[in-house]
Image (cartoon, rainbow, N blue to C red; front, side, top):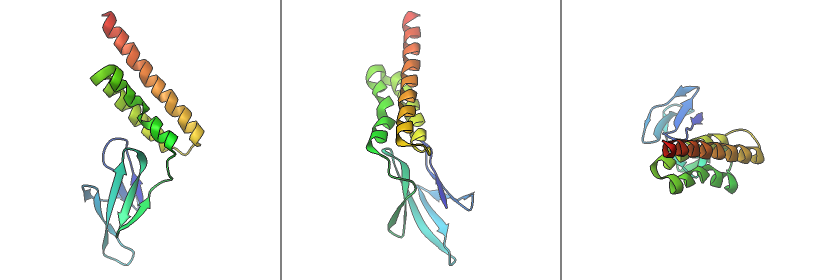
Length: 136
């Protein structure tokens, strides 16, 4: 069993490489001895790895995310303060990029550096757009 997660959207549960169907993140998964077992996938914006709950027991789908990475995931949203709706759009793109970086199999330092670069890139793209609009 695997859980696919996107920065935006609902997670998908794969059993044997085949996507299971579910409603509102509740899935009926095949059990080992036959029949099904109900599983609920709970995702959190603060954590790039969701938790799957089966028969009341919670199972993490990935390692614990360090606090510094959780902060860096949301850092691009500071563009909302400076740029309103357009800044929020760029901040959302930066969030999606940082969220996917947090799920990579790299060291915490490498992830942090990549997240800072991605945030800087999104900020620069926003400033170029803002400068172009103001100059026009």
